[in-house]
Image (cartoon, rainbow, N blue to C red):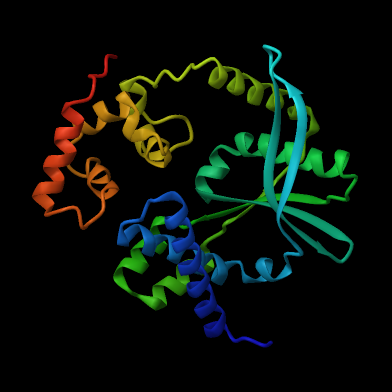
Length: 277
């Protein structure tokens, strides 16, 4: 079946709605309209900018598994990851799709290199498969594209898409693999030992190395447990205005009026234990 670009984007929208409904029914959570629109935009723009790569993918969502590892405290665990593979002209490329901005990936290349190198190790050494290149695909688009979308300016959007470089090559370095596996093991030990101490409020308000925004926005905003975290609650309560809007957006739009939703959020926050720095 030969589909033109409009047909393909129509299919993408259709599949997006189907997946969204399935996830909503399975998880019991819905997205606020603006977040749902942003998610669809990200999928569509990924297709428009990286169509050439997407059409070459030969193996999608390949599950990689490194089992029977041991933590520093002797617990057994395994590492799993999902990647896409492109095999073309006797070359094999592994892609790891991330929702982070490309500039953030480039500023923190070592962190992404460690993870992808473990996947490359599994692919090459355990699966005995050829691998010539590894790369990260960053689906989060830059501010210039967001602005063009908000303004509805298709001409500027097309120009900014051409400038966008979401494909980041990752060098393969086997020397990092043991350290990365050990770090995974330390995290497993912390989880199994019930060590869930929140970071300090000072850390939430600071900008870690390589980040353009504060920790609370860059990291906490993407954490499903943030509304159960005393540090994030303290941050939200002390940061009225734009930051607190994420709390309001967390609740569904049909839960009463704006004033009622605001009062519900504040009342819930005030009944929870205070955070001590």
